Image (cartoon, rainbow, N blue to C red; front, side):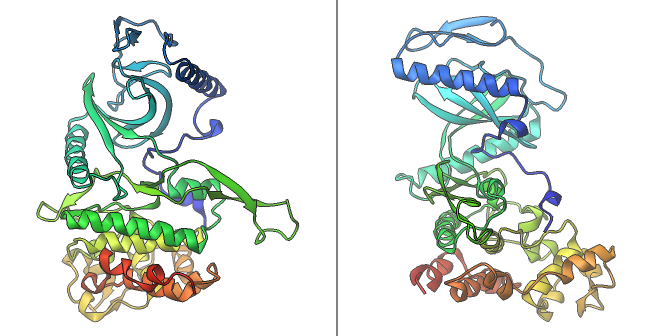
Length: 425
């Protein structure tokens, strides 16, 4: 599939882009310089860190009597993003080291925490009322998750602190590694091994089960929102690409530990449910068909993710509803009649006389028809990439990708599946 057609991704907390993808060589040199200063400071245990960048307007002492300078006041850009330069300070505690990502909500900056002596990721929200309000809701959700996870064992990202700075909500997180999608992309979309898929899947389902116990629905589970805790990896020969030793390698994470992030769209079951949730490729059929949604929409997303991790390809590579539904039928079989009978009036147009999907008659182009036609059945997709445990994995994914949400496996039920309980087949 053409990976370049994927939509723009939301900012990630854990990936500093390569220099060619994230600014100029000058930016790279500045970031390296600031990292060097921090490492020197860590080694000495004290001292003045200096102040690269523009002349400050104010300065004050931190708890260790070091002079910490504030950057000059700048207007936000036209979209409400905070304007900054590398090496500047956010308050007295945090020094900006690099830009890690950018999204609709704002920017994610890698910073040095002077008090805790560690690197952190700060999600700096745009100075726009609706995004500020959404950030406060996310902070409330993160507090609920942390309050009930004293041992920090539930696999959800930890909010270390939050504050307002120059009309921007700043959320301080632990610094993590790359997202599963970014690692996959950097690895030339080489699939993860089935054993890693098992580890990732189990941890993800444990996090989802924890959220659901607290009556929370994530609504935006995707590989971009699942981060490796560590950035470390090692290279191993990729024998599937070449028969010549030493000619081709793939990256393998040193640790399979992951954390779920981005709770900005999380919704309590008892609260208002907007009509559309989830990023397109991981959106459940009940959302598209206007049937209402609840906890099972998270499990549909998990099923799509498991296929992507073990194949290297997005399962439903589409941007349009009818094509998306046709892809679902191509991979999983036809929609059951009792689901078709219940579709929302706005989704009636996707079906012929309320009996079958209006495909290929309703297709927008021949390319769309070809894109659907070339998709294999789910079993064949998995069998192409999985050497062992294929049977249990196929059965698990079928259970997560049931069209009827009432028949879909819950997170707790999925964790009891033989794919996890009897892993070696």
